[in-house]
Length: 490
Image 1 (spheres, helix red, strand yellow):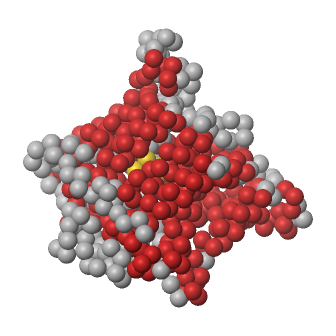
Image 2 (cartoon, rainbow, N blue to C red):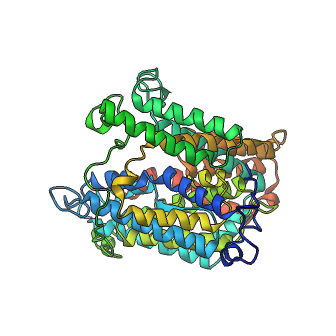
Image 3 (cartoon, helix red, strand yellow):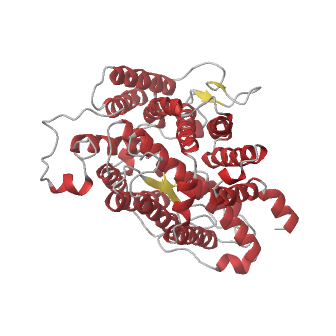
């Protein structure tokens, strides 16, 4: 998984970039960082298209759509602002934390904002985004007081390994689903393809991309992931030009999952950032009351809190950047940037921004420093002007990277002592429930609770860190949030 350093490519030790990002010190090269940053961008650029679809298809509690009005949302505005915030915060992660991890509007979190918070009667989009800002500010306070970092360090190293492995399985499943290789079945939760078999040109693009990526990877070709994504994109563009395949959203049964790889009009579009600052910090309290707001903030906060913890472990483990206790370098700086990103996403009306597990694809390509994050961030900023070109890369072309990196992360499973049931059972639940529930937070919560329960059952109360108790209680509330809300009548 470690990219071999080419002496011809390595920057001199006196290079300012090399010293600032510690490129040589971490066994990387400028070329590897650039490739890794681009791979991460391609692996997560779907958010520029998907975030507007999620936020833009639901009216708020007053019947208004985000950035538009009663007639519909302003999708180009949401897309441009999504890319802008992702670009700025990802560059901040690279510069201030020197970590190869990218950020963007969080999937799952944006759905909660759109379909749970903003849809509450009388609540406006500005009110909903104000709740997101509150959540981000609270997390920032937890980081600055040392609480968030302390919880991270209190987690046993075996559970941290399990989190990384579970995320590997999770992102592999995400890749397979995004490509349409795996889909919901009629009589089963999942099946091969949409009908129990593989059909359609988009599936072919995914399969060709995955096979090419595996072949290049096992032959140790530098840039294997990036080469494969670009090759699969070219194939997709050719197929679209010849066959005119539609998208599933437009009714094509075997169409592209999200966007058709074709250029519609000019490749350059002037971005509209009119959503910036369109939030009401305390407006929701007047509409729904303080108790409801507290519960909504808590649900967002816990998911954001532990998703980031899992992602930073996964990225560090893939890049061999963790210390002997499973902690990444400059963890506080990483968490500060992530917390600011959560508030920034709300302040820009594009939902909470958080760290993306797709960053592991860039690390798999050789990225080891924050320079890769800077490259990813610059690509996002360019995407605000070049959104038509970004749309040329269909999810089927980028999804193979998620599958391959899922395998690479799975290899860390040997670090778990499976003969010790005290850690093996919590590790198993963490690994299994992430893909099975489609939630990193749910997997982490199950592992935490199992760890505490087993220690209690064995009478080893002193072996439970106080912050693991706090986390366990928080997860119990998180898992039972709906009945609690019902009981309180909110």
